[in-house]
Length: 230
Ligand code: 5RP
Image (cartoon, rainbow, N blue to C red):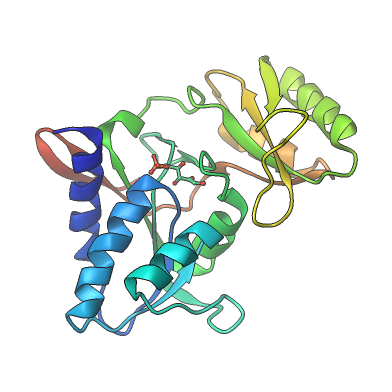
């Protein structure tokens, strides 16, 4: 089975957690999109849910497929969020933000009673850090923020390159109007310390370490779908 088919299998399995009446956070990325397609089929068959999208891209797909949407303003407490990830460690620590939606994804996941992460097996790692860590930053003071990130990394024994997503001339802009610095630190032995230190930097809006957020991982491989808890 190829990665696309595996993503769909993980999404199909996680869909069994969705019940009528739920307020549902809906993730961003290709795995989340596989989930949205299956969810839309269930909605067409009568499943009654209200979704809160984690990005404009997800909102557009939900609207196109007829998945009813709300906002966190109207629906600030959610039952469940289902989303993909770039990396998943054995304690269900995640790196997210490859699709640039990490800020809204984290806000929506934390507004939910439960978050389920869905992925193909290639996303599983022993230690986070193979995938560059997306860090959403304010445009103001970008250089100072980059220096501060480098200092924080150094103090934790991490090194590596920081690259502005999209390049210096035409940077990628998030739905919130911010920029993303992708930090290639390599293996991150103490993700909690890094998370705290990055949050202390004024120009950092949010980062892609999702720690103690997911309560279940639904992982598809060629041998079938497995479920993991922290
Ligand atoms: C978007 C995300 C995505 O969930 C993550 O990038 C995984 O994407 P995909 O399912 O396409 O592999 O965090 O910000």
